[in-house]
Length: 296
Image (cartoon, rainbow, N blue to C red; front, side, top):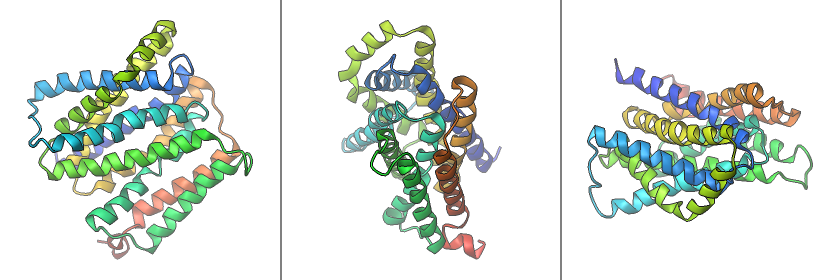
């Protein structure tokens, strides 16, 4: 099987797993706090990835200073990401939350443009502007003054995950494998979240079985297996956007599962703002670089 096919398979399976994370987080509701759930996700992800990593023979970090990069990666991809994600979905539907996070590929592209000097053409910049207009429609649909704080936290989620994705590229350039990148990031994320261990234990003790099983799914599958597949795709791909473009599928998956499991029906602001965001990111992915216009 060619590397190109593997990239598409890894990325597609990842977004299928991640798409379900939105409704499952909503299903947990307030039975497990945002901080308790964040610890559970980080801890279970670290355990799963350590087991897989040992079987794969992961190496130790090459240099002591690399530990600082993994500490940062643990914040961006795990501890801060999970906290923002959980707090955002406390007041948003699965569809709305997933649509907002779909701007992450655009943010990643902007960062890559600045750091790695990749080019963004005029169509790309217009697409970026339109995507943020879509976010503003979501924010202001129910009132100019009254802003849903969940949208703010979801924007933060998109920002930190974009940074985590770019950092994955840096680790790859440094010679680390996908398994090493995600395992050490998860370990540091779990260490950062240890302060919330008592809260997590208390939450689990009082939560019902569906909430506990949802938390296990989020920790093992969404935070462990899916993160490994995502890093694997990013490491072997020739172009980062090929992988990140799969995030555009998340809103559809989240909306379908959210409707089936939670009977969530998005409001008109979600349809209008979401359509603008999705169209913008798709146009950006197809025509956002000079090479796309040239047809290369």
